[in-house]
Image 1: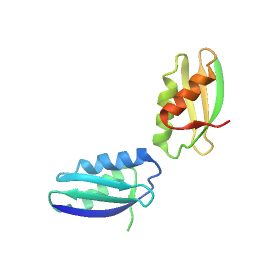
Image 2: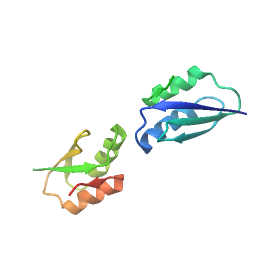
Image 3: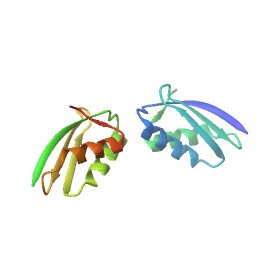
Image 4: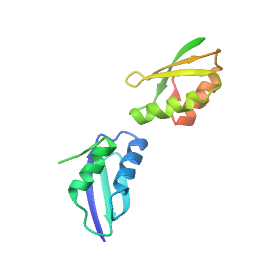
Length: 68
Length: 68
């Protein structure tokens, strides 16, 4: 079990949250995604440690950016 | 052929535009919807004059408000 919090920039509404959640959920091993829209905090739980590059790719696929 | 421009408040991104467009397109007689996100201007073309209440209902169904 692994949990990591990322910061995603550019999300402005619930639709954005849904898009990011959907893309991250498609990563193998992901068991949960929790997004706090005002701060852009995206907490991802997974059955194994994730490759940060996969998370970045998912976020960008949704149309947003990982901060940092 | 009728064309009316409404102002919709609360749209923040392309997903919002898509939601409003989809709901308005479901109104009987609507032939086109054009949204300008920065201003909230929503121009609706239709084969017959629309009932403003139907447009308001569609906008609210999408989760937004008609100004005025």
